[in-house]
Image (cartoon, rainbow, N blue to C red; front, side):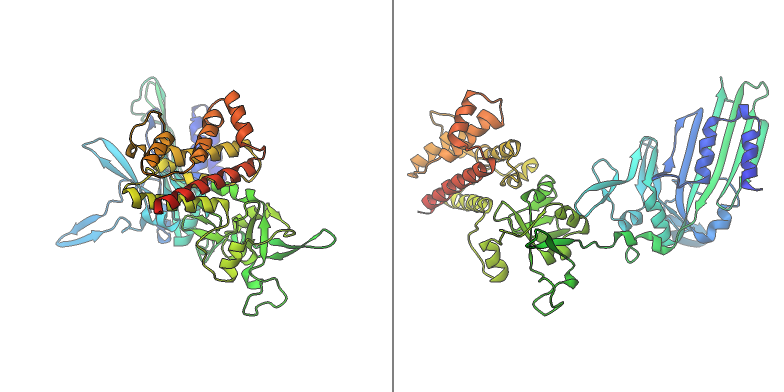
Length: 537
């Protein structure tokens, strides 16, 4: 029967008795992939209005069988591997032995009256999906962003449709949907054995039956739909799996500013490595791979806010996924080599950097970067204020442990693991950013100081106890930088501001938060370096 004719019969037959819920059900049957999410498993619900749904994949050779009826050939519990005995023959059968492959399978533990759902490991591994602590699965971008892919919701499981379509294309399998919907109307639910309508509807992608019935007293009404649907796979080219990546995901190599011209315009050139000059004579006349490109320091802000990134004065990295050499020794700008932008930076991040580019006029590579990158010189010291601070902090830890046999600072709590990442030169002259850095410095140097190794003294506080301990050991250093940090934190950054803050601000700050951050780091670095000298002496 023609599908349109069949559906017209359903719409026109005893319209008063048709359950409105079943109009939506019929839409699901006809078009399983109707939106960005697709339910693959659904159970339970109100007994008077229940929809059971289960989807899986099947060999394309089973298409005729699947379209030959409407009852369920598979359900979530029928994928348990094990042995099969036929006469004297014993054979081990995997979960997909009969040509069906689950997306979500169900295990039911009867003694606990509890079900658990298992996602097909091959599905997870093919798309490299990450299982988060909430139990859901996510795709992870090149910069660590999570995008939901599989969600376990109340009573059902849904999967992003694109992954179902791509999996079917990759394996050249059919997507199969089994559906059973029941709607009761009436004061009581009994067997409805008086049929008002009972018919099958078929097409080249589904087979379903519709039944309406009532009891003899017409006090209860039952409407049911039982269905099978299939979605045929696209070509393997549509899987989006290497080497079949979609064309719109091809690498994008934007042009960056490499020179400012006399008329104020800019000369740009692609960052694609294969089109750049190098030391072996490739592409004569083109800019060299190591052409410096400059950016505003705020280009790094987005990475500092994400826990999976590490930003130093010489490198930006995202876990072990990718990393790129940078020059932020001078914190007023960021330099990256043109070729590195094309070779080491993901395509999506090149667009981000492009938004922050500045002309190279009056900019230069730092002496440290030049020595390391062009002269192959190893430097024991660094020029950058943050690098100097962190190096002095590391040396202090080593020397203190060697001198006194125990660490000066306690180990950072896991939630403070990025504490040293928060110590930086502000990218803009922002009070909020400055106060965040002050709090990070105070926490690192004061709060994490292990004062249990110091004897009690007349004045409380880790700095006072440290001062007394150093004096007892014949070590004289000026601890005022530590006290200044604590003052800025206690009078302003961590509390409501008042007269004490005004006095501290007048004494310690100049009005430029960028300059003040540099000054604080320099004074703390000097303090730690002097303390190291005393410990080693």
